[in-house]
Amino acid sequence: MGAGESEIIELRLTQRLPAESGRQEQSLFGRDYEATFVRRSTEADDFYDSIMPAILKDDARNVMRQALAGMLWSKQYYYLDVDEWRRGDFCYKALAANRRTPRNQAWFHLVCDDILSMPDKWEYPWFAAWDLAFHTLPLALVDIDFAKRQLELMTEPRYTHPNGQLPAYEWNFSDVNPPVHGLFAWRLYILESEQRGKGDREFLKRIFQKLLLNFTWWVNRKDSRGSNVFEGGFLGLDNIGVFDRSAPLPSGECLEQSDGTAWMAAYCLNMMEIALELAKQDESYQELAYKFYEHFIYIAAAMDRMGANEDELWDEQDGFFYDLLHLPSGHAVRLKLRSLVGLLPLCATIIITPEELQELQHLKERIAWLTKIRPEIIYKLTNLDRTGPTGRHMLSVFNEGKLRRVLARMLDESEFLSPYGIRSLSRCHKESAFSFSIENNLYRVDYEPAESSTGMFGGNSNWRGPVWFPINLMLYEALLKLHLYFGDAFQIECPTGSGQLMNLREVAEELRCRLTRIFLREGGRRPVFGGSSKFQTDPHWRDLILFYEYFHGDNGAGLGASHQTGWTGVVARLIQREGIAQYQPKPVLLTGERDEERKLMKAS
Figure 1: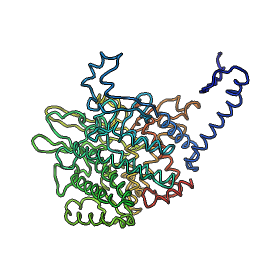
Figure 2 (figure 1 turned 45 degrees about the vertical axis):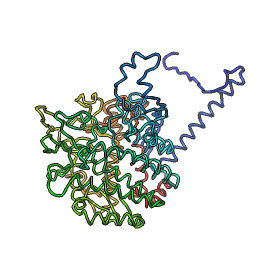
Figure 3 (figure 1 turned 135 degrees about the vertical axis):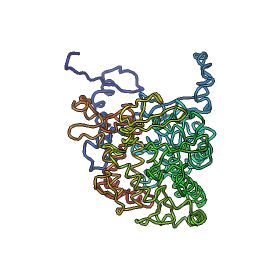
Figure 4 (figure 1 turned 180 degrees about the vertical axis):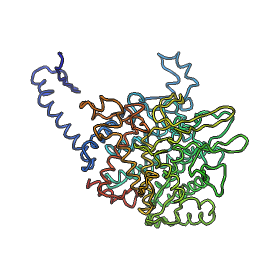
């Protein structure tokens, strides 16, 4: 074929034998073949049009559609029988001897034989439990039944360890991923209510029962001091901390983690929210709802106890949450590294309407009883015993004063707020690196907006500065919830120091705009493509979007795995929210207000 020439090759999967006559050849290809392509293309256009708000601009629609297509492309058949792998087969008996005491030896029960949503079909062709949970949100927009099945798979006996732990990922199933499956079980229930007019209560019951086992594993295994402050270890954040959090510390120190504790506080509220929904038809769930309410209260109180204490996560001087290092001497020291671990407590928030609470009389009585006999553990948080400016109830680690102090740092462009979302490490550490010495070992953490300079976890990811979509999504939704409680009267500078006041819904929308800006072409360029002139200017490439693993903390350029639509695919949900927000300025996330959002979805 000569230069500038092209050829069209037609392929078709069929059970029919090769053509024996020109007539059969014509029926397999020819006009019918071309018509089928046109018909399938039209059907795909109609389907995506049905889930995209009509008000979206063409460029945003293109990004959203490619994000969803990437999620579908990353589905893959995955087979692994760990016990079989350890024993080897007739071809690899010699290798089996090296597999007797390898990683994953405690997971001999695990048998995977399913279609799974992978982080990346190229670099990461294996499931990762918390990645997969985030995948279900965009997947639910195109196939909610598949999304629900993905969450349930992780809680099946074939996957979950007999002790209740969920497998992290193939490299080391025993690593600990954040417990987000309760959150997304609840989110899928809400989304199905929006899509079909009714949530799947049986799904909610099934996964709730199984998550009870996982919650118990966390309580028994990751609170070594029994103090309601949790360790967690790795937690999927790779090198965000001072130490390798998967390895023992030098002299037996214990690292109590702000993120591990925040995840568990949020887990309590996710389970409580599910129990409250199930209690509408089965009063026995009110007792379980109270169990998670009480556990949340004890966790929140342990994070910031009455008085000034050196062994708590909240630092009153800085107005921020930090990890806590317990030394063998019995003393404790806060590791004042400002990172996402101090922002994650924002996500431990639920809102309940007065109407919902009124129907739960037994729960109300138990809440009033605990508030009366334990006032010292209630007074520093926002409890369900009172209503906010909008008349709603909120349960949160934060009161108004504490919230303002943390948000002032999060919305500071010299700290966490970048033009493209929330950084995973404060930019203040660019000029002032964090350092810590223990046992004559000096540890140092710098702000690194791009690739990691440390070899921790192979150096293949970086939480020391770049923007990651999963945590940004959670912070976005947390801001919307907080606005439902505080209302428009709560105003805060955004960005900090700008003099521009916003309510929390407006702050959330500002964050959403900064995140979606990474992919949208403004002024002829897409930040995601960085300095690549081919992708920025070539008309054949500039609209083909790559959904990277994470993004440069200062310029938004894509970093890490370039094909990892994975949890970056949640940008589809953020773009969809843009269209909804233009119809109705007030975000709707709650059970009692789902009908309103459903109307907006239909209108869009």
